[in-house]
Image (cartoon, rainbow, N blue to C red; front, side, top):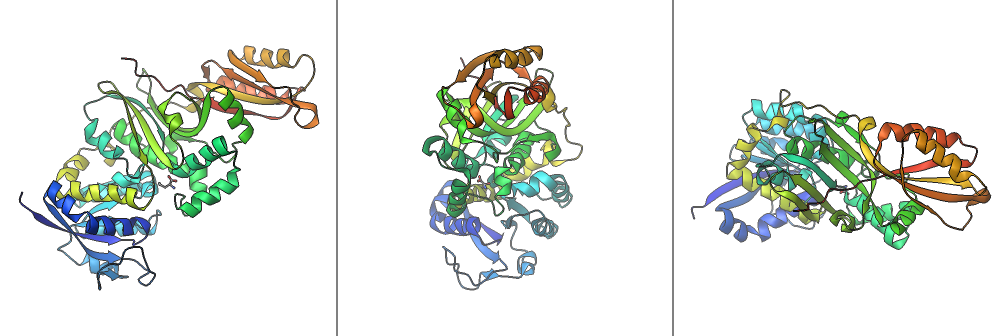
Amino acid sequence: MEQKIVKVGLVGYGIVGTGVARILSENADEITARTGLMIELACVVDKDTTSPREFDLPEGLLTDDLNVLLDDDSIDIALELVGGTTVAKDIQSKLLRSGKDVVTANKALLAERGLELFAEALDANRCIAFEASCCGGIPIVSAFRTGLAANKINGFYGIFNGTCNYILSNMTYNGSQFAEVLKEAQAKGFAEADPTLDVNGGDTAHKLVILGGLAFNCTLSMDDVYIEGIENVDIVDIRSALEMGYILKLLAIGEKDAGGRISLRVHPAFVSEDNPLARVDGPFNAVSVFGNAVGNAVFYGRGAGMMATASAVVADIIEIALGNSRRVFETMAMATETGRTVQIKPIDEVDSRFYVRIMANDQAGVFAKYGQVLGRHDISISGAMQHEWAGPDNTVPVVITTHPTRQKNMTAALKEIEQLDIVSGQPICIRIIDIPEDTE
Ligand code: HSE
């Protein structure tokens, strides 16, 4: 096979950057054998040039001066692994203007300012590749861009945040407390620099905007996503639902309805313990995709971490060097303001099943009053559970699950339930998502 030398520059020599340097050094022979490419890390830029890293770069490669990279015309591909949405944006713009294709893992930047950047890339006749921005090492971006390109995508359901999944798994199976497990996730390096973005669903929403744009071939923004995080999840509900056969996940959902409207949601959701997503534990990510030709395809793997994310970054370097990324980038609807627009379905019009827990006074007539409110709002109960143990102030937790219900009906019913004299505090309401089954 003919061999081609590819020179690469890296900005941000942090955890993922170190992983990239390691892969390019340790797996060089495999990469060349598979692709014919000899990828050379020719310049590494970081403001910190002294701290020890897990991989020692050759002498003279690390600099704190971005201009060294910008001025080096022998480097055609640059990696932005800095993170954040301000400095990183400037860096990417400069890299594109200096004639380099850009590889990035920066989901926040792409979800929030992607259109701006994509326009700059198209203007400069360059491309931006972003496999590492979603679900770490799982090749889900290329799956949507090429592997599943033959399909009309009806929907996808994902666990996109390892920190949240780690927290929820530990609460579910070990009875751990939220704050304590979050600290563990930070120590293990899955969490964002500001873990608020993990637990409030923002990080998952960033990935949903990117993958939704690819899946439905349209231009999306963060405003299109309904977001709830896991900050207020209570172990009582995790345990109650477990008894009923449900596991709690922070789910990202992209669905297209029969009229072509798209619903994008991030929220805690109970999924049946029989669904493959229920068995995704710890920091792992997964995406369950439904295409009209392929049926159901499930992708699973490490959603974060040094080597898994670096694997995706190197995949992008290879795709750019082979000439594939540019072609796909130019035809990507989500890259342009005039890209295909879609109608977003408001959350109020979405139907799902619900888990509702009230703390009810332990007295006669509770179920009657409760049931009347639900009935008035056209909400049909599918299951109910009450244990013989008292909560505070002689209250008992009463849990019901519902048949499919319009969100606006549930919202109205909850407002009334909260006012009932038999109910103490606010009702807890968590959606149950019945992920479709591939029955053929
Ligand atoms: N903080 C993210 C997570 C890292 O926990 O999944 C990858 O985006």
